[in-house]
Image (tube, rainbow, N blue to C red; front, side, top):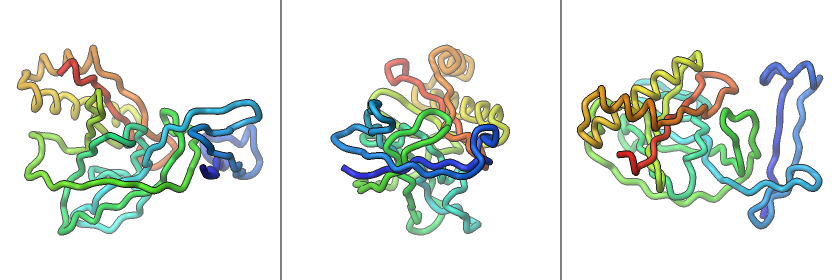
Length: 208
């Protein structure tokens, strides 16, 4: 049980038409439910919004997104998932935070919440052929992730990453891998609030 907060600024999504000043709303989170509005409860769907390793050649803000990970805001980064990140410096320097009790596609907003995270790390030598961005595995799906601007470019990059992942896992050629990704895959936004926009492509494991 805890308290979460939902905040916004008029500059976010150009909300000046509705709001003249920033706002922060505290909401109760109890027994797996978020008391968002009077009479309206939403089920908790916890996730880690920001998680990544250190890039090889620069010091960056934790709010940055990139091939190292970072502020991805991908809802599938949650309990039971396995996230694959690059290791480019000694010790990896893994960092994470920005826990959400719930967030929809695009991070139109979210319930920020404190969290206790238990995770395990394993070093895997080498990486899947051709993959340049983080990707993850859930109980039922493979998910590729990318960040770019504009949003359409992120969609293209994340599709390319899924094609490469299919080729690596199944041995299919590029033609067949694209047919599979194009017909059975789903491209969804992670966060579109600012900076580089993040997208992910989901493909159910049964099709692999």
